[in-house]
Length: 123
Image (cartoon, rainbow, N blue to C red; front, side, top):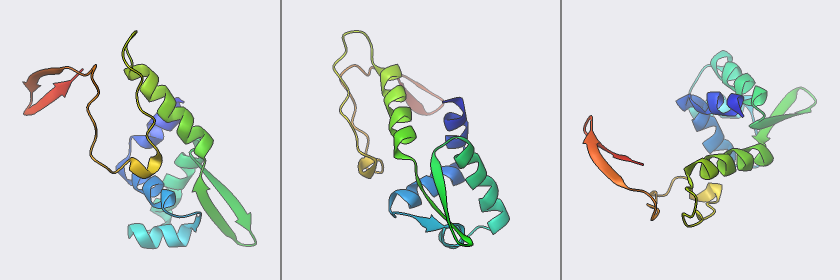
């Protein structure tokens, strides 16, 4: 699980996951084109994502097709949601990955705290 969180810490790797979410599978060349990054840079990011089991690479001839590993993605989301819940707090709604880019919904157990560094903090 630590590898998954380390992989998710980089904005470019999160972009790779967002793009793969919209497609069944893509090659490294297609991903590099959509991200406008050099292939060696993308290769490093893909290796980190594969090491965290967030993506799967399927070889067909000379092409490797990348896709999301939904099992690990769901386990990661489930862990984060379990960390957010408090004892008798209402259950969190299940959010599909298609809803990930929509505005976030505040849950009843979240409390607004004083503004810190220009942003309100949520506990």
